[in-house]
Length: 109
Length: 116
Image (cartoon, rainbow over all chains, first blue to last red; front, side, top):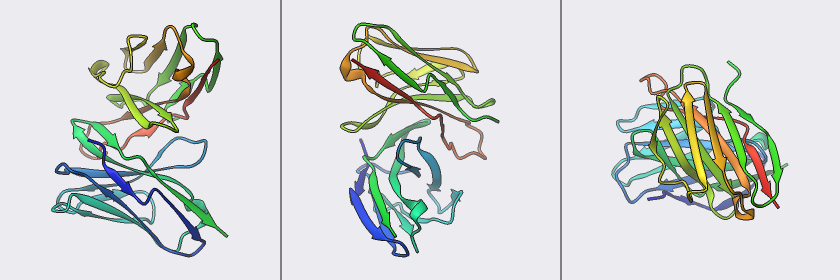
């Protein structure tokens, strides 16, 4: 079942903060976050595992609440380069990711 | 490594024609995924392979779609015959199942398919 992302879209001014949420009706083993810029392919941002382990490439923080079956991505002091669509993904089985519908983030100067 | 390579980058064809999309995964990756992305349906998994073997093709929309992975460095997605509703961006992604990679998926640049 597809994870639910909120909000669907958010507009910020450069320097403002944003939180993107991802929730699932099924128990989560891990949550993956990707960002897709317009006209490009999705790019990995972060993986959060049960037990608190994380792996990420950029200075973006996230949380994973196993009990609530949700994850949140925190974008602080946003930069123009943060613009894009953010996707969360949860594992259905083996290595098959089930993707959320995406959250479109627009950063204005 | 050059990353995941897809060809062609753009394809325009007429309804009824056969379309073949190609993908070269990152060397050493044992998982390969084919996705389709549209505004209406978002990012959809079509099929994925593990060690060249198709594991789950439940996302393949119809019998008109077929995918093969004859070896670890090459995969194709074929649509025959193509229809206008197949117009989309098709992504190929690969990942490694070793414990250090956390199953990060690396996406190719995509093939933008337009069926007239």
